[in-house]
Amino acid sequence: MSNSNGQLVPLDLGSLKPWVIECELEIEGTKQRFLLREPSEGAVTEYRRATMRGITYDQGEGKVTGVEGSADAEPQLVAACFFQVKKKESGSEYEVQVTERELRSWPGRIAKTLFDEIQARCPWLMGEETEEGLEKDIAAKTKRLEKLRKAREKGEAAEGTAKNSPQLTTTT
Image (cartoon, rainbow, N blue to C red; front, side, top):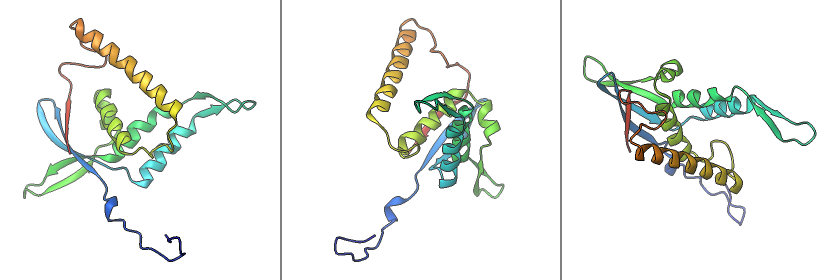
C-alpha cells in the first residue's frame, strides 16, 4: 500500500483478527459447546462456487432463469465454520469440525441461524450488496415476521419450530 506521495505504508493486519462465537446447543437433553468461526478463504470460495454452479441464464437477455443445486452451499459453509468443543480425559479441550452430514440431521432452523450469523458478520460473502437486493431481503423477512406474529397470536407454533428439538444459544 502506498500513500499519495508514492511511499510504501505498512499494512496493519492486527485489526483483522478472525471472529469466533461460542455457542451452546442442547442435543437430546445434554448441553454441548460449539464454536462458530469466521469462514476461511477456502470455505468462502467453495460457498461461492456452489452458489454459482447451478445458475442458468437466458442467452438473449442475460437474465437468471433458474438456480439448481445451490441449496447445498449453506450447509457446506456452516459445516466448514462450526466446531464442537470436546474434553480429553486430562481435561484439556480440543475442537472437532461438525460434519455436513451431522449438521443436516439437525433441525433446519439451527443451520439457518448459524448461516444467518455468518452472513451478517461477512457482508462480503457474495460480493457487493445492491439497494434492490436489500429491499427484496427486507420484504421477504417482513413477510416471515408477519407470519410468525400471526401464528403466535393464534397460540400456534410457527412453521419450522418444534418443542423438543435441539436449541441453540450464542455468546460473543
